[in-house]
Image 1 (tube, rainbow, N blue to C red):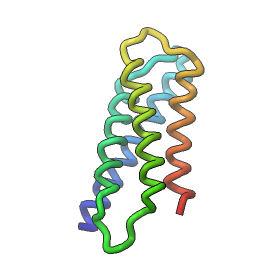
Image 2: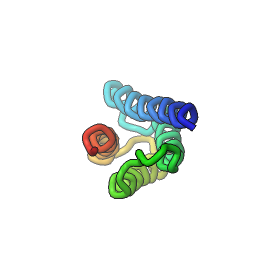
Image 3: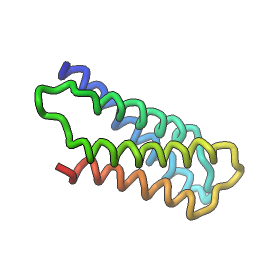
Image 4: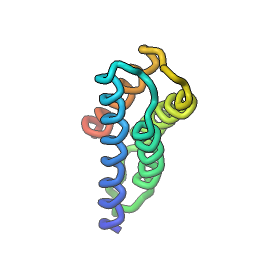
Length: 113
């Protein structure tokens, strides 16, 4: 089971890289829109996050409050990305909120023990 958890964690980190990397690429280009990397990153983050929340370890599961917080943040990011994906340009605040929520999700994962 530990191998499965590590694979899920690895894919989860790839999803984070796609989401944040896609957002940074769009921001640097000056054209704020949702690209395929951001969409796939948010989907991968959500699905692997749910998989990682399953009790695969022996008594070393994260706190339920942390899991719920990360799930709510992941759902917010996914909804913001999914429903903006076909727009030619996204509002600056909306785009920066996606980036900010992505960074907050990473902070919750790292600092909440």
